[in-house]
Length: 137
Image 1 (cartoon, helix red, strand yellow):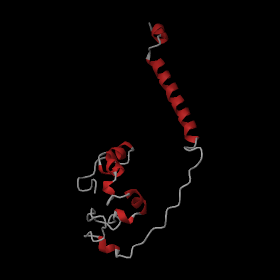
Image 2 (cartoon, one colour):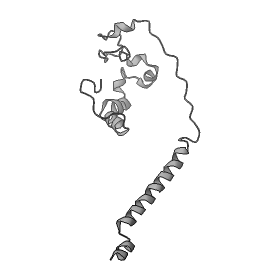
Image 3 (cartoon, one colour):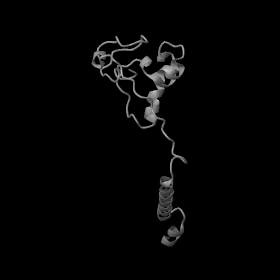
């Protein structure tokens, strides 16, 4: 009986050998893939325009929205977050005739809706949804 079970292709020894071969093949394929560059030609980053400094006291932005020019900004806890969409050159060019970035179709689809949360989770950048106080602020 032992000779028959040893030659039977469904034995655990045969399965272990097949699994080892599959693991070896995967490891070899991954080693080769990791040596290949992601891009055929390395893309060059375009230089960002020089940062515009505002003359207003940046600390005076916390706790109020006097600095807002679009009418939709809310008070934020940090100076970095206390900025109006009309103060960012890359946003201004997307505004067209809209008074604020929140009226832009692309912004609505990809920033305000749950798609942004889904995308961060899909990419593994966020493990859990932030609290309501922090979500979409």
